[in-house]
Length: 192
Image 1 (cartoon, one colour):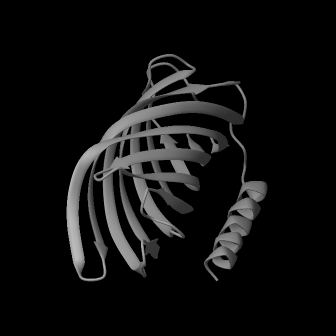
Image 2: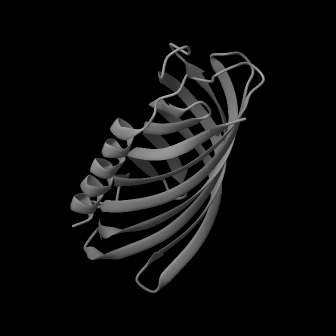
């Protein structure tokens, strides 16, 4: 059902894109950018003891960036991530829930910046706070995180773009556990 809702939302976004009045791209040195986005992803947990573990992850994010050059943007961001899933460990199975709040800083390199469609690649490093529970057991941790991503900004107005992004996130957790996530996100970007 979640996948069907995601497909419906994507279809509506695609229709809005096709009907929008496309403006010129505005990736200029000295410009600021505010981006709002959301995503859904399906993840897996890497651990010596976790088997048959899958997670559904929903997130919302706010990024703020500055174009140092027409093609190079430095940006920072904060996300709020909710996680629901099934967890299988050595003989124990059940549901798992968590929340993660990463704060990161990174660079994006934009290609073909004079177009309505501006592809980009980038990466970010940051810190996170996580609270997680399995049944009645809950705990919290703080650590570092990394992300690699690629995306496309489609300018629909002079200073407004729809942002599509595919990301790989890696979050090392305590006790030799790590969370690897591949996600697709969609959002809006405002230039000023």
